[in-house]
Amino acid sequence: MEKRVLLGMSGGVDSSTSLLLLQQQGYQVEGATFRLWKPDEESRAQGEREIESARQLCGKLGVPHHVIDWTQEFQTQVVDYFVGEYQKGRTPNPCVICNRTIKFSAFWNWAKERGFDYIATGHYARIGEEKGRYFLRKAACEKKDQSYFLYVASQEQLAHLLFPLGEYSKEEVRAMAAQHQLSVAKKPDSQDVCFIPDGEYGKFLAAYTGKKAPIGRFVDQAGNPLGEHLGLWNYTIGQRKGLGVTFGKPMFVEKIDPVTREITLGDNDALFRRELWVESPNWMAIPGLEAPRPAQIRIRSAHKAQPGMLYPLPDGSVRVEFQEPQRAITVGQSAVFYEGERVLGGGVIQR
Picture 1 (cartoon, rainbow, N blue to C red):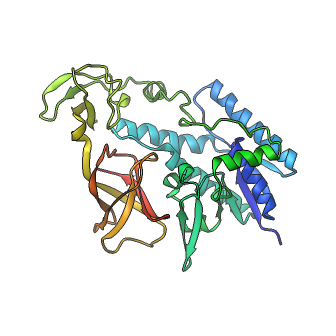
Picture 2: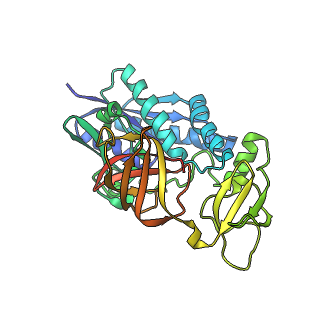
Picture 3: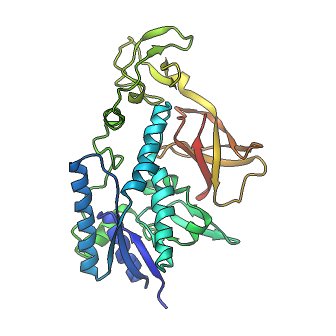
């Protein structure tokens, strides 16, 4: 009997080509597009166009299409989290939280209740299994690898999750779409946070909360005042451009303190640290960390994994010590632990 797969579809080339591949592999496929919270009429209209694009593709390929309304869930679990983290002086990654709460947890539960065997998405990653334990593997095309964003999947979800594009490059995916005359073959990739399409985080936070970003002082490493900043939400660790004040030499954001509202500035050398701490990590290739273990660690999506050691702490958190100091380790971003192409696990950087 054919296995039933529910494919998450955004209306773009990746999920559309995933549908083709799943059909070729003999699965009984249905498509699903999520209706998510958007901040204004323009972005809501764009969301509806994406739903219609996915619906048309499913019609062309003869598969059923579902629209799942997760507007409220997305707002409370992703948008409110994003806003709350910025208010604490942290720099969150909303895509990671969306994957955990919506694209993996809510989506798999919805599919399971309706008798599907698997869910699938158009992410570039692969899944491995050893001795009954499932884990992520990097995509075959490391340039497109998205495993950094996906480390939050549980063992149950990984056992019922398919990534059809894991063995392909973006160029190969577009070529397949063109070969099958899909209208999305040349559609550009989305780049920004989906609910902040213009990338103006400070403007979004002010509009969403109805408040202005908390104003305070720039200070140097000794605490000496350097001038007034434009509001905490407008800055992130490592930032140099757009500080709103000139100093006659390059200055970078080193620390953000939401309590005092002070932003510490320093030179580039001040941004380098050898350690970070991760609370409540999600483990994949291993059930947990029982002893110090070498790994390669990524601290942001565009960061090349760097060698270091993972040290277990009594409360289940992890201390990471890099072989070489790393620039702009940012609280709120994720640290993901690799062993070759395998994802050992990961979590949110707490300090």
